[in-house]
Amino acid sequence: KAGVTQTPRYLIKTRGQQVTLSCSPISGHRSVSWYQQTPGQGLQFLFEYFSETQRNKGNFPGRFSGRQFSNSRSEMNVSTLELGDSALYLCASSFGSYAVVGNEQFFGPGTRLTVL
Amino acid sequence: DAKTTQPPSMDCAEGRAANLPCNHSTISGNEYVYWYRQIHSQGPQYIIHGLKNNETNEMASLIITEDRKSSTLILPHATLRDTAVYYCIVRVSPTSGTYKYIFGTGTRLKVLA
Image (tube, rainbow over the protein chains, first blue to last red):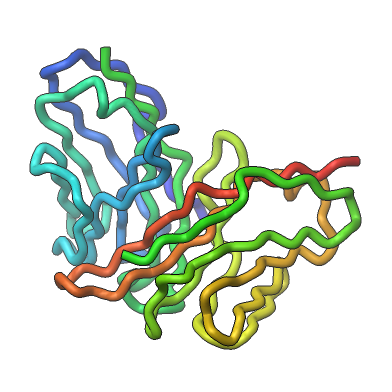
């Protein structure tokens, strides 16, 4: 079974631009979660989508948004990029919502975003 | 939110047990403890989770103290491939309607040949 895939793997943008990252979950998984990983803040939860609906949300500004399609693929968008948005963005999928214990998350390799 | 505290780094000899501690003194009664690890350049990988009782699977054992203020992840026979950053995580129950995982800063485990 193929794992979680994320595209692109690397991205360079400038301040003020917007960016869209893509995540394809493991086949059959309906939940997709997004995380931001930085050296200073570590791994921080952004949001979770389950069956095309945002189920859970972390403490990030509205510039960070996402959506999920009917095939469970998900995209994350960051508008008006800031230098501090430079990070590794990780996507994780699980069969059911991670709110239910037992639905372990499978992480993709991440997209490394650099904002200049 | 509950937070976890972990030592920043540890070394372990190959073939020996690696015991990774985690302090989560502010955890609530229904909040689960998870462990994930992250090998360089890869996404985190699930290891194990527990609530009150000790748990064991093919990868590791999780020992949770009776007061639930701390736990220890045990890799019984560490190999070089276990070198990674190990995260102790609390799954926070919703107060505002949101479940979320609170990741600690992680312990960088180095397994030595």
